[in-house]
Amino acid sequence: VGITDVKNLEKNFSNISTYPNPFSEFSKFQFYSSKGGKYNVSIIDITGKIVLVTTINSQVGFNRIKISGLVSGIYAISI
Image (cartoon, rainbow, N blue to C red; front, side, top):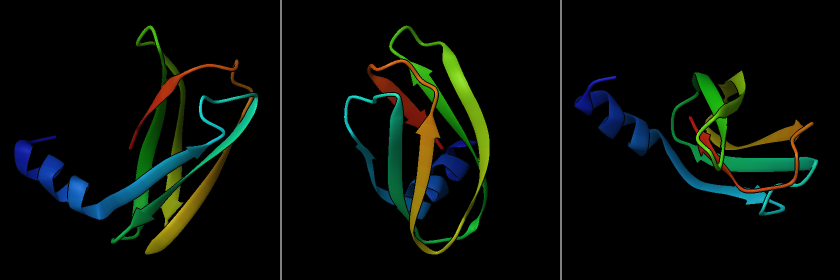
């Protein structure tokens, strides 16, 4: 991903939130997307290990994604 691509990606997503936070066994995150499309989502644990990778089909507007099977803790989300 080039610098221009990163800037465009930042414009596509906003209002990213998780519930509950920190994550529990069953969590969800939501975000607002100004442009629909397929995106890869990675969940990264506190040690930097990628623990989940999935592809989402986002729609314009708010999107919600349910996540299960993770150990309770703090994670980062990369879209």
